Amino acid sequence: MCGRGNMHFHHGHECQCPGFKMDRFVQPCMLLLLYEKPAHGYELMEKLSEFGFGDESPDPAMVYRNLRRMEEEGWIKSQWETEGTGPAKRLYTVTPEGEEAIHGWAFHVKRQMKRLEIFLERYEKNFMGEGA
Image 1 (cartoon, rainbow, N blue to C red):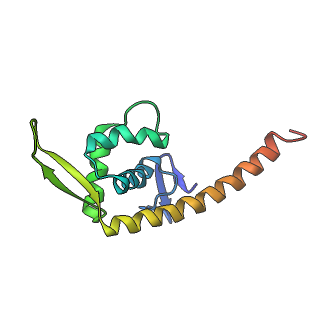
Image 2: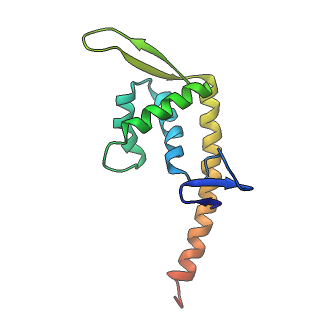
Image 3: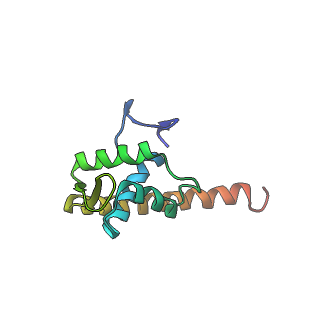
């Protein structure tokens, strides 16, 4: 990993690529959930546990911050729903650019999985296998 702590660096500068930043990995998970079914932010918070982010609900500020970022990137769009009682809510949907981002993330995840498998195989050989 080329990062220090939670930061990811290349050539001494903070990088915007996903790397091992799990807080950044929430974006493709949210995109995929929205691709499957448009949703409100609160619904996304409930669904994120399906990706193994823990038994606790994710931080709402983190979810809405990522929704804003993805909307700024053009990956999602939102519209206000004012039907029914209660306050208006934003309904988020994936754009064609967001669908492309999902494909890009899938490629990156597959590549990372291969690297992680190699690492784990060597780790197990060295620390769990014979002579360890």
